[in-house]
Length: 137
Image (cartoon, rainbow, N blue to C red; front, side, top):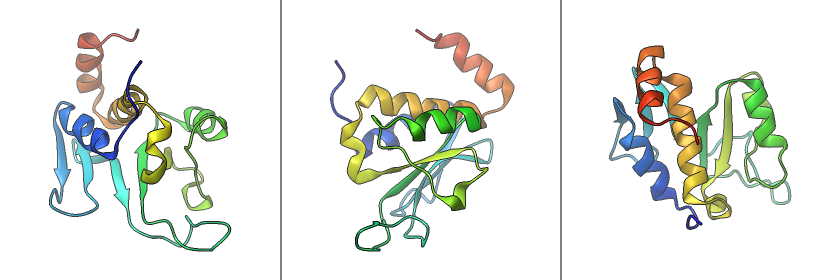
């Protein structure tokens, strides 16, 4: 079984994807892109993502693109995962994850989400090339 995930796994897997670049790599909140399109980014405190008990804004939200609304809903409605969304992201093909909860997932689960995020934003040719080299299990 895969070990518990760490935030560093997000960085490592994102950078390992073909043609991935990191925008502002020295920043506390890097943005990973492929072909000029973001696929993972670390979000700053925003008014829409907050602790319901204290009202304190989350400062550790990671955003992952997903293929479509169906995939998004499957992830955020699955109560066994820490993925969530906010009204700000209604209609946006992405899911959110607090870095403080990443250990609830395995490294393999996080790798799959990052890879799927990349696939959802990469060109069709790049995605097809990557899938040919990494067929689904």
